Length: 175
Image 1: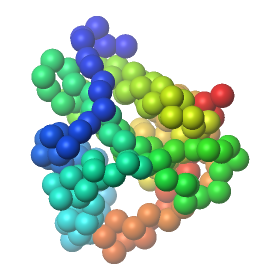
Image 2 (image 1 turned 180 degrees about the horizontal axis):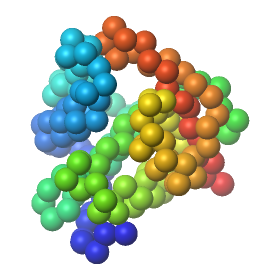
Image 3 (image 1 turned 60 degrees about the vertical axis):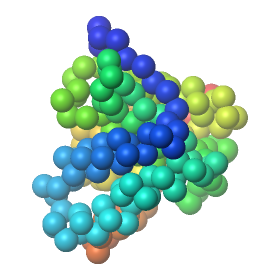
C-alpha cells in the first residue's frame, strides 16, 4: 500500500480531455512493443480518441473511476454495465473494460485500492461479479488480477487493428 495520499472518484464529461490523453498514453506504453504501428494506430483511432471518451462518458451504461495522487492522474478504470458478451458462472456481472496505472506509479501500491474501488462500485450497483478480458501474453496484469481474486473462466477473441488476439476471461466473484 502506498504511504502517499490518493483519491478515487467517478469521472464526468469535464474529464474527457485528460482521460483520453491518459488512456491513449497508457495503452501505447503497455502494447506498442507487441503490435504493429498500423494495428496500434487503427485501434487508438477507433477506441481511445477524445470523441470516443466524450461519447462513453455520456453513456449511462459506462462508468469511469479516476485515481489521482495530489493533482496528477495516475490511474483509471472503465466499467461496462451492459449484459456480458461472454457466458459467466456468476450473474449479474459488469465488465472491467480497462484498468491502468501509469508507469511512473507502478510499484506504489495504487492498483489494489483502485481495484477495491471498482469492487465497491460494482456491489453498490447490485452486481455479484466483475469480469474482464486480459491479453494472454500480459503476465504482469494476469498475476495482479489473480492476486485480487479473479479466476480464469475461459477465453475470448480481441481485435487490435487487424490482429486477432486471444484474451483470457477472468472473473471476480464479489460474494
